[in-house]
Image (cartoon, rainbow, N blue to C red; front, side, top):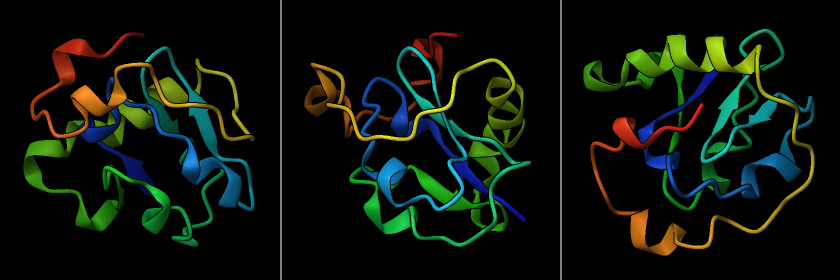
Length: 107
């Protein structure tokens, strides 16, 4: 099993989760993070660190967010590893409560 970064991360990209990950499974895109499912050890230490509650255990991903299971796996192969906390995106506060942000995902 793995953990999944869901839609709430888009246009926020808070990186609090990165520092606590013992296996460096996070990958950084232009405006979102994803988790590499081949690296994640299902430890769950990242879940409480996310200020927008974007990280879920794969079995807890709701039906409307299931596309993010595949999306994490796909983008993790393309995006570089991130192992240190960085500032969130400049307008993250404006986007943190916005729903249905998939159309804003930058690859």
